[in-house]
Each structure stands twice: as structure tokens, then as C-alpha cells.
Length: 248
Ligand code: 13P
Image (cartoon, rainbow, N blue to C red; front, top):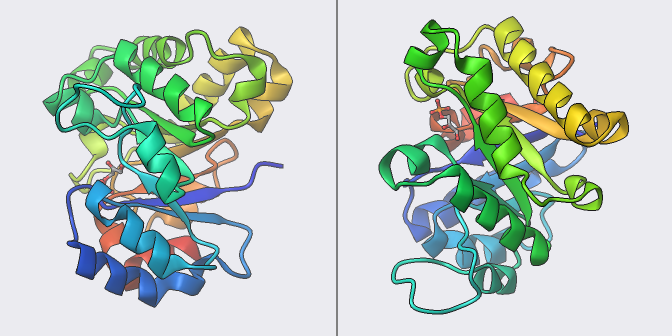
């Protein structure tokens, strides 16, 4: 049985003090629930948010991770630095990174390997553009991203990987993929993993949906058989909305 995982991706929102204040109010969200709850916060707030969370059952994630431990990579943050803070997850290959910061399948793969080496669980984001969907190329695009991101990853490492299917046209647009369409693509991703590894690994891996998830649509999304959680942007910034989403 896969444990659902609901993650807030704050993106470039909330200062350190705003972040502390926010997690202080949602600290108990991870208690008495079968859902794994996670907040992925800006790098500068990770340490303070970790301290504020204390013994809370809410997990902590970064929104990126570099592949080298140290070196001449101005502006980057290494897995060693993130490990010291004690984060649990790292979002890797978010479409905004791919779109605005030249993230490629190759760099995604390097980041995935680095995260795993430091026992930080990767949340690998994949998804097609509207154009690709309209040209019937969505599956091809997602398949390429999934296969390339997993290059050199062994069966044992797969248990720590989470995927997030985020169709780019549904991010921040208020336009959600229908829950059936999202489920279909997520089931397709599971099949790719079964082909590459085996049925047991495919059945065990958690695959989230992301893109305009809100209190009003979360239940329908979570009720789909292949969808194991949500990666939530805008609605994760508001206490009431995030709470309603986690308690769907
Ligand atoms: P929204 O929930 O704001 O559409 O963002 C989705 C997303 O990109 C989460 O990573």
C-alpha cells in the first residue's frame, strides 16, 4: 500500500519570518493522518523552518539540489549543505527550473543521483506543455523525461524516489487536468517504470499530481487509483487551503 504524499511547494514565496510563522500554525497537520505531509521551502528558510518544525511530523524539502558537494558553482546549494540542515526531500526538475534556468534531463539525472547519495529523497517532476498535449506528444515527452531522469538508478534506489506529474499548462493557471487524464498519465508513468524495472517497484513508487490543486478538487484527484498525492503550489501558501487539502 502506497502512503499518499501531499507536498507544498512554496516556490519563491515567504520570507524566513513568514515561513516560521506559517509552519508554526500547521505543525500538527502531519499528526493522526495516513498522509505524509511535506513543505518545500526556499533555501534560505530551510534551517529556520526545520528548527521551528522541531518534532512535528511534517517533513521538509528543498526546491533544488546541486550534484557536487562543493566547488566553483556560484549560486548553487550542495547536497552536503542540505544534508546538514536535515531535509528529507528535494524537488528536482520542476518545470519552472526547466523553463527558466536551463534544467535538462541530464542535469536532473545528476541531481537525482546526488540526492540519493545523501539520503535525500528526490521528487522528480515531469510534464508536457500545452502544445505537446495538443499535438498528441504528451506521452512521448513524459516517457523521455522519466527514462532519462532514471539513467543509472538501481532497483534499490527506486524505493526512495517520488515522481510528480505536473502538466505545464495546469500550473498556476487554474486549469487542472481532469482527474481521469491525470490518472491515465500517472498510470502510464507506472508502466514505464514496470518496463524498466519490475512490477513490484512500479507498484511501490509514489506518483503525485501537480497543477492547480485546490481544496475543491483535491478529493477527486486523490480518489484516482494511481495518484498517490499532490504537489501543491499556490494553495500551499494559505494555511486554511493547505489544511483542507491535507485533510481531503
Ligand atoms: P500550482 O498549484 O500553483 O498550480 O503549482 C503547481 C506546482 O507547480 C507545484 O510544484
